[in-house]
Length: 260
Image (cartoon, rainbow, N blue to C red; front, side):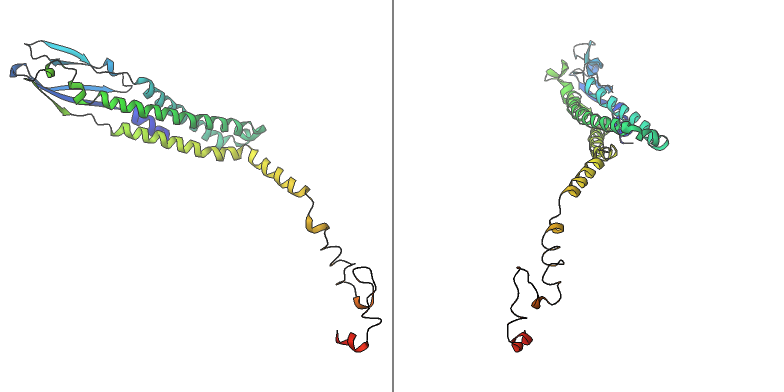
């Protein structure tokens, strides 16, 4: 869906600007010079006629710049991203077992997702720069500088209407949104590859193989075990923890032992 919005707002664009040239001789003026342009923004091929204010002679001019490379690159990435997303959705729903067979499907999906994330970033940045140049090249004030009649102070050249670039601005926004979407999806596709789960199993096996400090130490053997002083009945009358006979049950006074 995001890919559709990206290539539709860029690939389906067409704009128009209008200029006015008011010559000193009113009969030679042209107050409505319309210049239309569209995707893929080969502006140097957009021709228009303007009065020279020197009799009835008119001159043919063209806009400046060719920005088709960045625009077509952006639209191409959007179209291929849409087609791949559509194909991946079909595989996820109808060929889930085939997708997980030998872990090839998730691995290919992971690689393609990383590649598309990078391409979205590059194409969106290139098209953002290209759009900035398109705005400059189609600025009515800049186009008026191309006309010879506008170089004479006796003539009045005015911009009447500027092209609307809102859809092109939206295409750049959707381009970066696609980059965020695909880059964020890398983590979820990575989990499908099995590398994430295998890494967790390896960490769990490592923890199990390590000797437990509380299973072999003094807590289970010496202090509280069968040989410990607390678990032996009548510890005052038998051999103590340190291997020496206790004096409390044998030689001490009876009253003293009873008090203890």
